[in-house]
Length: 457
Image 1: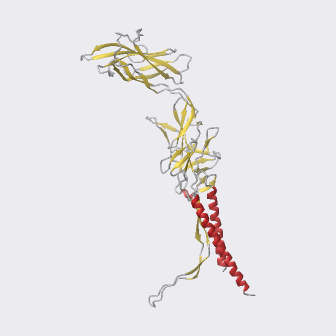
Image 2: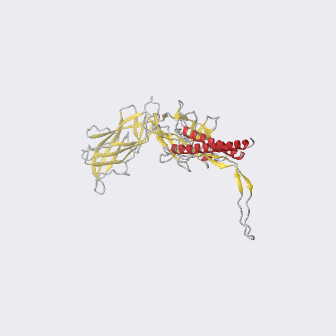
Image 3: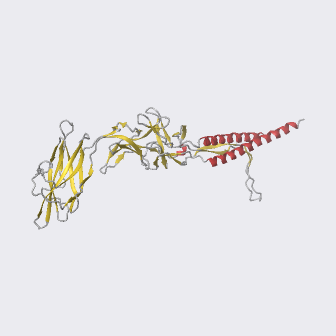
């Protein structure tokens, strides 16, 4: 009789634990990155009244099954369900969710511990750190290299450090992007073949005729100082080559209204001048002696500027000469002035890209993700955080988003709780009925004991 009471007590306690888990799940139905838990039960032990008997083939007697009485149940496991929650769009640039496996890595300062979370509701503090709502630093990489094609490469084998949008030990002050000196300027378009030639021109000469075409372009020195230049074209003459085909010579001069020194460093040139030659089909001729289509122009800033002289390649390869209006213009100039950080964005690959006032972009860092052998084995540490356990696998290094089993990032969204309310309410009903049934067992056993004690009267 007492066994039934103890069994019902174990059932009451276990169902109460299950209700606690359900209550916590429902309480966190709107918690960012929350992972629901599930309670499973197991039989405690069964007391064997009599063992099993084997059948006797000689006598023809059949076997008997063991006779056992169960002694109740207990909580077998409380599992963390690591299924992905639905996404909520926020359009906040510092909100992130993970499309797939992985956890954000956050750190409690240089002397604190390392934690892991699926909650990507980050913000920027006044020093430029990307932090959680409780002030933990988001971890990643900030050191990068640039390949020949201009792509930025982060080394995922490097040690991760707190991400900061404003400064770091590798890039120093990231609020300002340094100026880049002009090394190449490309001109493209047409020179009008119907222009009247002005005759023979000597290199370095400044023709006075009005039949010219002016192309403005802007170049920059190492400090980002801006220089407005003019490239002026004059049609010189038309003559036949040794094969009897017509060739047209054009004269150009690079000038500036500022106090700068300009010079074409090519052989046989004088000042920032030179000659171009076109064939009878309107194509520019490359490789002709004394006619460079990629002259190097040297610019010497004034003495009070503080910048050294610099050279840039002036590329005429894309020019043509047809009977149409002149339309030459600069299409590519690689220099630019300094700029200040105005905004930033985070890509699916985890790279934080800063946008500057001069129109340039520069990486500010890259988010790192952690991947565990058994994510369900992580231990909850409160505040949407997890820590490794002996059954989750160790955290050895971070991975780039989208690589080696980690998911890519979805910026401007948050992963919500994976709690299914319909399922939780169903579980609540089942748990309530289980608790009631166990309480009825306790009541019935008590009444039977009461009847037993009344037999003495």
